[in-house]
Image (cartoon, rainbow, N blue to C red; front, side, top):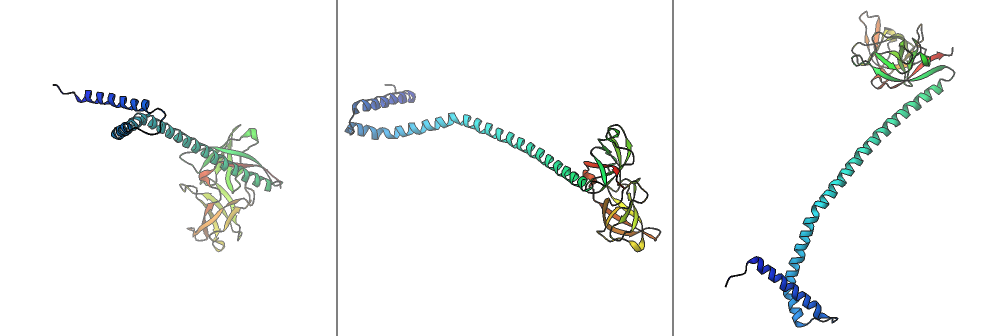
Length: 276
């Protein structure tokens, strides 16, 4: 007699289990108490039922795993996109906030000079890449009343003067350029001198020709003197960092830290007229 194959044995066993379970269900009727046969059958088949339930759960998990994985991946992609959007919004917010601060400073500065100076607001739209601290291009020109030799400032202090003008732009020679010379004085002891840019100094300026007996101290403030130049008197220029003797021995030079940050120059005010 040939033996049944495992496959056929499992098939027949499955049929027997199904028949027994159906028979139990039909014979139970509405009674609450199980017959001895039903109890014995349930006890015998309970391990089989447990295996079937566990295997069914694992199969269900296996089938559902790719779907869950796709949903998690899609959720992560959405979160990453939200992070990118939030970073962009934060960047725009910070830029607008910084611009508002600059404009408020300009407005406060212009308000404090009402009756003294008339100014025109402008934006820096260009710098020379190989000579960053020499020339700045602004977006106002003849059409806005800008003329050559007009003084350019920010609420922080002196920037330079206009050298060339077109209808809608102007070139500003910065005080950090070696060709620039501004008559100034030390606010604390009234010592006069000339503020000049330094070649290759990355925005450094020196106050030269200071009499030795009037040498300023570190932290002293330097402002424009208004003597025989286009620059009005009293515009802040910078603070003294260090003082050293000049070659002649009669004068001293003071290295200044400018009040204006020439690395981040964005908005300026052009003085179009001065009330004497």
